[in-house]
Length: 239
Image (cartoon, rainbow, N blue to C red; front, side, top):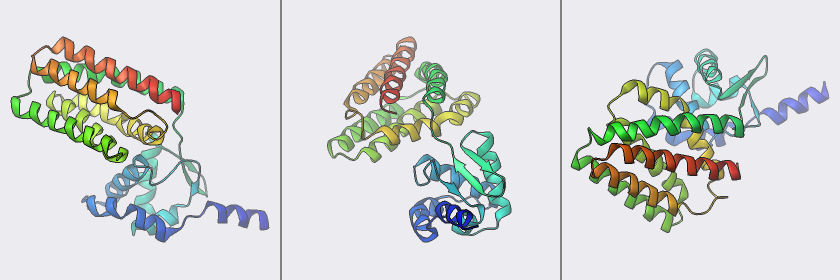
């Protein structure tokens, strides 16, 4: 009994601290339907490393953090489990799945091809104003690196890629990439302080935009795929 009590104590979280950590997410998620709201909050919390892998968290604890009953929380957790993000433990709670090198390699192989296609398609739909937006994002990324604000760089890097995917104007393509995007973002955050400063990423982003501005879709596709491949190899090295 004593051993079981110790195990439960180790698995509990500091509810007030987790509430504080999740406050920006709680404020920004506007979804009112509780299962969807719980899903979005938990997904973003895991994605942004506010909830870390390797610890058992009780359903009742996370329900208290979110200010809702356990039923919508469980629905959200089941959905996250089907996406391979969490592992439900009967009568205990859930664990956040770690990012395995094999899984990440497979995700990058898929995203590399699909984002290359997105860059190619975007080349034929993007306008000058949108190209200027991408170039502004690159400048902001460079500034974030110079200020050693790597979390901001990661956010801007993610936004750069998603804008290109959006400009492709292909909803099915966007949906498939989005399934894997959170895992890639989480891997970047986990390894960001172990890797060299991402100045090479800035160079590659500029090359992608230059190809798009020149209306060379094939070159934009190759540049994007090369960029993703280089990033994959770098992240796997330090994961």
